[in-house]
Structure formats: C-alpha cells, structure tokens
Image: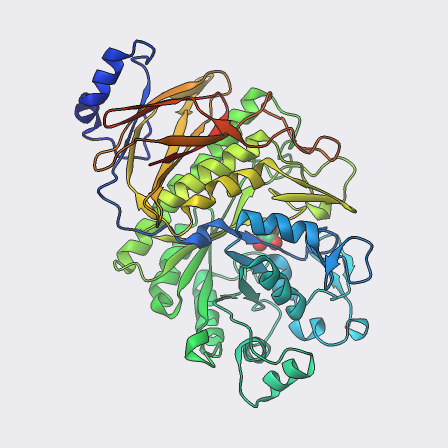
Amino acid sequence: MNANLPFAAIAALITFNLSNARAEDPAVSPSASKLVIRADQGKITINKNIYGQFSEHLGRCIYGGIWVGEKSSIPNTRGVRNDVVAALKRMKVPVLRWPGGCFADEYHWKDGIGPREQRPKMINTHWGGVTEDNSFGTHEFMDFCEQIGADPYVCGNVGSGSVQEMMEWVEYMTSDADSPMANLRRKNGRDKPWRLPWFGVGNESWGCGGNMTPEYYADQYRRYNTFVKNYDRSNAVQRIACGANNNDTNWTSVLMKNVGRRMNGLSLHYYTVPTGNWQRKGSATQFAEADWFNTLRRGLEMENLVSRHAAIMDQADPQQRVGMMVDEWGTWYDVEPGTNPGFLYQQNTLRDALIAGCTLNIFNNHADRVKMANIAQMVNVLQAMILTDHEKMLLTPTYHVFEMFAVHQDATLLPTDLESVDYTSGSNKIPALNASASRDKAGKIHVTLCNLNPNAPAEVVCEIPGGKAQKLSGRVLTAAAINSLNSFHKPDTVKPAAFSAFKTVEGGFTTTLPAKSVVVLEVE
Ligand code: AHR
C-alpha cells in the first residue's frame, strides 16, 4: 500500500463498475493496483515552474554544454548552441536558475559584463579550480533564456558579495530609469530591462554559501532583501530565500518565523545518493538490482521531506503565500571514470528516468505548496537532460521524462488515491507504483505513472469519478535493462514509444504498465 497517499474509501469505490470490468474481463488480475482519479475535485494549478532547470558554472554545463562562443564551428546563435536550444524548446523549460549553486556565492556579476575580452578572470574554487573567464555573464544568460523561452531565476551573492553589489545587479537587470546601472546596461548593448520574475538571496547559506546558522542567515536575508528593489511594478521580483538541506526542519522553522512573508519562496535541496555515502556514492551505470532499489527508495524520500517541511510552512503560513522551491534535486553518483571529479559529469540511465518520474509525481501531488523545482543540472552535470561531446549531443532518459510530463505544466491537479502493489527487495519494500493526474485547459486528463518494479508488469484498474474515459492514448519510456542508457554511439536506446496496453471500461480504464517504465496517458 502506498503510505504517502490517502486511500480511505477506495476499496468500496473500486467495487462498482470496475469490479464489473474485472468480472467481465478475466484478464484483469485480482491483485491489480487501484487508482482513483478525482476528476470532479480539481482546484489547484500545477505550477509550470515545477518543471524548472538549474545551470551552474560547473564543469561543462555552461562552457561546452550551452555556450560555445560566436566563433565556434558548432552551429550557434550569438554563442549559444543551436542543437541544445532546439532540444530545450521541445522540452518546454519554464524557468532556469543561474549562476549557481555554490558558484553563486563567489560570483561578482560586474566581472561578467562588457566586452568579453576585457572581462576579468577568476578561479572557480568549488568546481575543479579551473579558470573562469566570465565570457558567459548576465547578457549571455538572459539571451539564452529568451532563446529557449524560459523565465530567468538569478541567484545573488550573499556569501562573499555585498548588499550594494546585489542591489546594483537587480537595478542593472530591471530598471528602465536614467540611472547608473540602467545606463551601464544600455552601454553594454541592452536598452530595455529584462523581465526578472525570480531572484535568490544566497545559496546553501548553511554550507558553501557561508556556513551560517539559520538565525544569522535570516537576519542577513532581511538586510539584503531590503535592497532588492522593484523598479517597475510590472516587473516585480519574487524573492527566494535559501532553505533547508534535506531534513533540517529547524532551518525551515526559523526562516518561517524570522523572515515570514518577506520572502515569496523558500528553497529546499535534496539529492538522491544511492548508497547514502558521499565518499562512495555508487556508479551511474554499473549497478545491480539492489542498487536500483536503494536509489529509488532514497528518491521516494522526497515525499517525506516535502510533507515534513510543508507541515512546518503550513503552520506559519496557512494561506500558503510562501512557495516551497525545491531548487536543487536529482541523482548524484560517482563521476564517470576518467573525468574531472570537480566537474560532476555522470551518465544517465533508465534508473534516472524513474527517479525523475517519481519526483515529478510527488511535486505535482504537492502542488498546493511546491511552486518551483529545478533539477540539477541542465547539461553535462549530475542528472542532466542533455549530454554533449564537442559537436555531438544526446538526450538522456531524464530529458524524455520531462518532455512527457510537460502536459502537466499549468494544468489543474486532479487528486488521486492509489493502492499500489509492493516492490520488495530483501526485507525492504516500497510501493511499486506512483502516479499523478491533471486536467489541461482543453479538458483532457493526463495521468503519469511509474512502475518501479524491474521484474514484473503492473496492472492498474483506474476509476475516474466525475470524468469519462472514452478515448485513451499514451506513451511509454522503458528499455531492455535497468541500466540502459543513451550513448553518443547509440543515442536512441532509451526513448519514448507509443503505448496501447489499456482498455476503457465503464467509469474508467484498465492498463498494464511494463516493468521498469514511465507511462503518460491522455484520457478524453
Ligand atoms: O549542484 C551542485 C551543487 O550542489 C551546487 O552548487 C550546490 O548548491 C549543491 O551543494
């Protein structure tokens, strides 16, 4: 039974037409999992920003992955790779966080403006100690956001910056006045301000961002935030405070109490490390079923984390004005053999696709509180959407999940009750299935389902009170092995395919999910 989802009256409900469906159809097993989609109860919008991304000056995320420079032989538009832009547009990226991460708290934005050849260099102390030449700065980032159609979410420097530096950056980006920073922006080639809906006041201030206590950071936030001005009411900046690491609920309590509504969002960071041991995290590609299970079990921890932090936020903010922004999440493995340990380059398998599917289902189901999430990271770093090798590019299994789930963006969440069969490994078990559902503006219902069990397909009997299921279509992402991946030689090993293992019945439908799969169904 899925402990994370209420399942009170389902047993009674499921007996109606669907039990008839079973009676009529001996192919439906009595051990099928049961899903109720409450099509008559949708109230909350799934904020499209849950499908957000994160790009840091780390390894080959920016340099090589996004930015190749105007003189590159790799086709580009003003220095940004055309292949990457086209793929990201198809995936519908709503919001992009930048420049870090830990890098944000040592980044001085004025080093990243003006003629590129004159920009000062710096050492990227967190990520490999490499020289950062600042050729990708504010203008290049904003241009990239405009090219892919994403809103910018800029993270300011609290750890090693100053209040004045942060204040001037916001003025530079958003003011249309005859003012020093707006005029500097104009001198650098951009007349009109950019839209800046999201601004982060520091990153991981409990760690790489300054090793602060929550009380100290809350005071710092209040001071810095005072000078993050809105220069134009139609371009108001929503402020995001640095939130907790994992299960540090005390950080959330203190921030809610001492900062409260001075912030629009409070972040949360959680990474899935297969072993739970940061010294030996485990391989991204060479793993056994026990590692698959443990990774998924740890990934599902996101449900408990979101619930626990949300409960604290609900107490202080019952009207839910402060959004939970899970602005770093994803899998974190040992780096690919032979690559720079500071670059966090890892491959991406079907296991990552399942982690992405489960996590996005969790966020959807918590759409009342979770208003943004940013997977780490967009290209060539951690659980990436895209990997590049010079002129080559591939889409990872995680990319395909984001593309399949894009139907939920800004749709109305439909509450679901799921009674799932278990997936057992040794003496441990987790629910084999998870799901979320929404209704889009055209009235179509979309259901996303994950079957975590790599050994058995899963039958699901679905009831839709308040809705109909006259016509179904679907897509599935699965592969031959738990560690199947897309390589530069075989970039299409893991990719979505048409799915038709479903049947409409009165009041709903039945479906059989393949082992180790992510499925999206469209119900009309
Ligand atoms: O995403 C990689 C790093 O993880 C980020 O820079 C930091 O915020 C987190 O610890």
